[in-house]
Image (cartoon, rainbow, N blue to C red; front, side, top):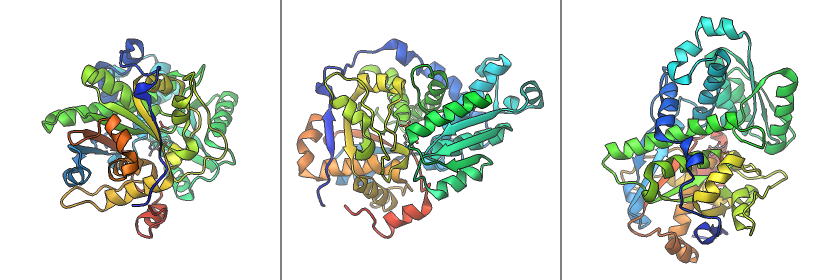
Length: 408
Ligand SMILES: Cc1ncc(COP(=O)(O)O)c(C=O)c1O
């Protein structure tokens, strides 16, 4: 195997890392809160839990105890996890507008004639690489409202088409992700639309919190699935990050749930958008922003400005941040698609597969032995990965898996 140039910051040694519990932040992700979120999501007729697989043969090959994979390509038929956030945040917006508690509502009630007559027309707007936009467009359609979506420069036409097919007005802009977010925030204000953005900034953090709580329901599913498979808690949790809402939400739930048994959390990013890696590497521990085009195949991770809330959570609870090049993700896609022995096959896209590619590099490339040892990724490690998307750009998926683009 050729060498890749991973950049690693072992945050456990950094003065900002702390395993003490910040109850205020974690209280939003308490199992009781997230159970309400999950109940709302489950009230949609096409809801099913996504599977949690075990890759036993691969675990032996990589000399770790267990590898668990949550396969989010099977979420609501939308090929990615993102809708879990959008659907809950939009439901909360509607609940607030009609002055009712979310725990007393179901999808059918939100979708009822009574609520429609009360609210009239609503338009939801968001900026997105694709997966969040598709989730927002789908949820808006299911709830009977309009949606407007702006994608960053260079976004995939296939992902744009998928969003339009959900009934949204959607465009590929000439801005990067973070500027597209600002553009949409202005449009929302001007037109009195509701901005459903998957990242927080000063003065905008309620809807992003609801989105994060929507994502945390995946962690709730995982902890339940581990118990029902009679498995122990994971020792390591690899979480890919764009703005970090996903990683922050899953980390917060897991820390709140497992407390002193919480896994070591590793944040994983592409080099071109490694804002967490850079932030964790600085002496002051503040957010470092990445600007420019952020040209990576990991489209969902091409974000340069950490969500402020997710940053607070991950700065406190992440054990390490690792920045990777494209071939790490491409390798992960190929491994998932070509399992060893009777391990299940997972179709995993560019942003979904990077954590498995990383695990493979860490365990197979002797350059990383010391970091693997520091992180305790030995033969008893139980590693949890989340494949956050399937082949959301099917042609690009085939270019990598069939034709071998981005070789390692
Ligand atoms: C497939 C996939 N995985 C992971 C992420 C990262 O999520 P976040 O931006 O919350 O860090 C995204 C974001 O769009 C995504 O689409």
